Image 1 (cartoon, one colour):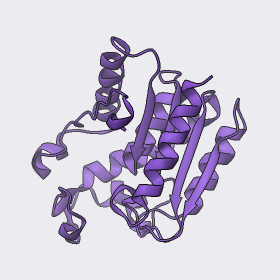
Image 2 (cartoon, helix red, strand yellow):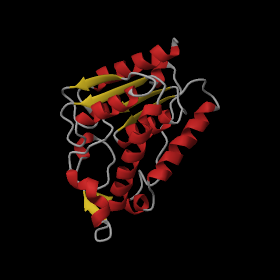
Image 3 (cartoon, rainbow, N blue to C red):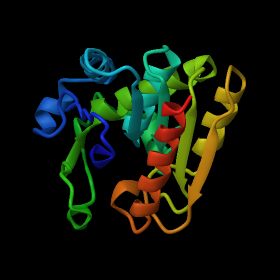
Length: 207
């Protein structure tokens, strides 16, 4: 994206890129505030802002769009329904279990925690509910990307997101990806995905 001449800001969310212990001390409200801060920084130098997010980052991008803080939104594999149904009930076992182990994903060439705070999962559920409630308020252009073989998020999530947005002011575009897993940006179709993202941003620039 930077090669296209666009200013890029990737804010580090509180508790991320550090330790599970630091993550356990943060929650949805902190992560929303981090994205708001990043958006304000970009507003100082940019005329238009497009929020792009993967997984929970997709939720945060949609949250910004629902509050009219960005001029376009791209959501990738954002969760409405998770493949692991147990996550929905994280709040029930949070008093008894502080962390859950996460399968190793080092082959994906990215930083991940080997264990995740149960409180963070509870907070994610809260973020899913809050974001879904605000989707119909989105009025900016929206591009929704979803892996058909997503191992983390049920693919029907994108349909739920699209139907809620369509109840409001705009009709989002959905693109499905057949060969990629949950981490779209590291999958075999990442070059095509980058091209679609660039095309979407260019379409907003030209209006």
